[in-house]
Length: 478
Picture 1 (spheres, rainbow, N blue to C red):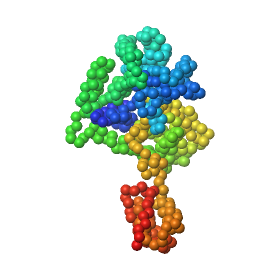
Picture 2 (picture 1 turned 90 degrees about the vertical axis):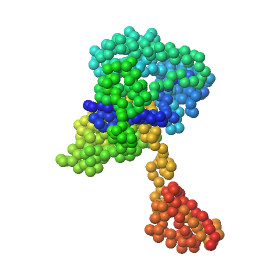
Picture 3 (picture 1 turned 60 degrees about the vertical axis):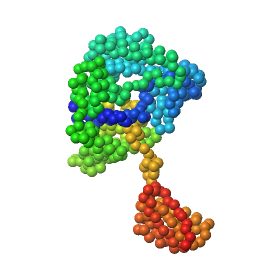
Picture 4 (picture 1 turned 180 degrees about the vertical axis):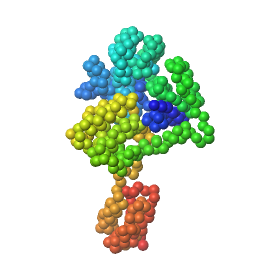
């Protein structure tokens, strides 16, 4: 598989795309103004305690207090009693989303290239992507040797086949960082930022740039220099894969050169076409994301059962891709087309689990319900791409539906009848409406009927800038 990472760095925004065989699979966006909070460590102050929920709200100096659930950190943490006004070190686990503030944890982690240091827990973990048991045991023994007493370590996937010296070098850096952060926390007054996670470009190098990436292309000289300097320290063997993009034309930016802009624009669409002629529809709700699979134009070659099965199989790969591409998290319900054979249902479920293994973000397929719906979850830490790039429609306020012109005309009639009962007779009425409503009034001869009913002259004024649902009535004397 040919893997590429494409980075577009601007003062206002950084965009990084992951391509697999020239197909866009993941996109990350970070803006200078809003940034992100996940990974940041704060010295916060407890503002409110909820004993019945084993939780507290912590002031971290942001617009909204962080929600701290002690149960996330295990039994020992859950048994701790927080008091209002108490200072506590917390790390942000989820960015603020909608009306909810950020979610925090007291289980702190400091990620390095090969390991993650957990200074507040005594634990050793090995990446689930390292499957060979001898290698897992070797890395576990190394982690036991190099970790500071009483601290925890998670060995990352990129540590596979690396030497003890490589991991020890990473550990020395992280242990030194923790010592510095601890000293900073002691002398800082809450609320205070103690540690800020790396920016997007550095995180991509740390978390994504591995030996199986063929090319990392960056369009910014300063960012390119930082990446090369970082790799000289952590993975000098990967420097040759990093390239500085130099446009051949003045207006040829890197995302346009790699034909990524159209792919990004398609993320706002609910409907995603499949190569066979079928399609999937993705809908977001407050509680979950729902994905529906349809045969569309695909009629198959044998029988209905096989046509349905083939459509579902093709939908699997696209669904897994869209989950990564749109960074959809939380509860996800997939409505595959009904399959009669248990063997086919099992094959679809197994295929979905196999595709999801390519995803770095943890997911869990729970199975098929009695209604034939696949239930799954995917970890959600940051605001998804759609929420970041787009705002709710000001006309429908995010509902995705507005009143039809016919409905608006009925509302106008209702208002006119009320007006006719209480206002003076005669005069003219100026009716300001959206062009679609004005067109409906003229085509259906509704205007003439309204004039006869109200015994008034009604002048319709088309207001292109008004909401399709809104109208205004103004009385003018003859």
